[in-house]
Picture 1: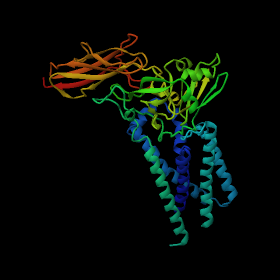
Picture 2: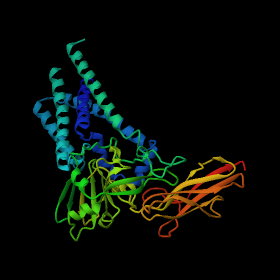
Picture 3: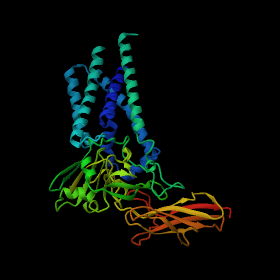
Picture 4: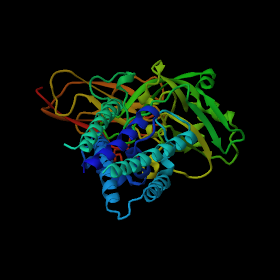
Length: 148
Length: 331
């Protein structure tokens, strides 16, 4: 469990660093920008009301995303630990698969940058940041497994 | 304790402290303290102080765009793609324009609306430099934070549609779109895109962020609000009723007040009405004659059209209906 938490914390730290220093959207911002436009307003507004209004909803989203990222580390460590043949190529291939899937799903939202980078540069930076996050996740999983 | 556990604990502690510090930085930059604060009540001023101007945003943390990095691209159905930096925009002939903005989610009697003096350049100047192609009928607006919205090319070319870079005589604050935003009079605030960085001229019905959700109205409904007295107030003697009225870019021609639930109407005095793009501040002197009164207000816009009494909430095209306030009197 502690290993998974450390891995999750590493990913969280990297994502926060990208957001603060380079304006790269947090995973929660990418996901919400990708999904929320497709939530019909007739459902969107009552949902905000149900959680106490837009500010409380945003606080809930922001703060709950922190344990969710840490949980991703725990899940990744558990999933890797269950493999019978734990090898770096399998881990690397899985990480690249996760990254490509994230690019595919989040693509239109990647063009945003909170420090004002133009869309093309912002897309490249967001894609690179996602790669680093996934690489940190995979690298930390591998390192902690090897040390164990 | 094993060495491995000590190392892991140390790494976890360092990461937790580092992450906590970064979370605190983001929390301090977040929209939580300022989004959704309403401008209403006895303290409403003709020009809303910049720090009080309402904010509604899709973001958890609004952008902080560096002025020297900012670019505005005009592309799509144009003969000549144009990219301007802030210096280019600042060199164009500027204009000052007082304009009221209202959020489409503003309910009857609520205060998600404010008035400011904006300085910038007519958007038409920028669009015409790109020479729109004959088939272009709409503009699709992009912002740094990924927000998008559309409006008609006709609206974008109106002389009052502005690319603004100052608010009340100062550079735009980050939360209001620094370094540049649109001001689109007559449309709800969602069209006045903040942190704008790209304008695409299009000939299709592409939908932006809130348009996909179903928010559709582009034209502000005529509204009016009673700011003083407030609901359930106890009044006595001579009372000055006060409030605001707004009709997008159509102006306010008349405000009427009823002190008996809408049975009879009296014309209010309009004390502030600088242009058809702003709210009007009204007042009405009144002496209560009974122990309970229902105050109601309605406005007539500059085209002579009376505000609709049909009560409807803000979803999906802006709230309508009369604002009613019940007061008690000691006579």
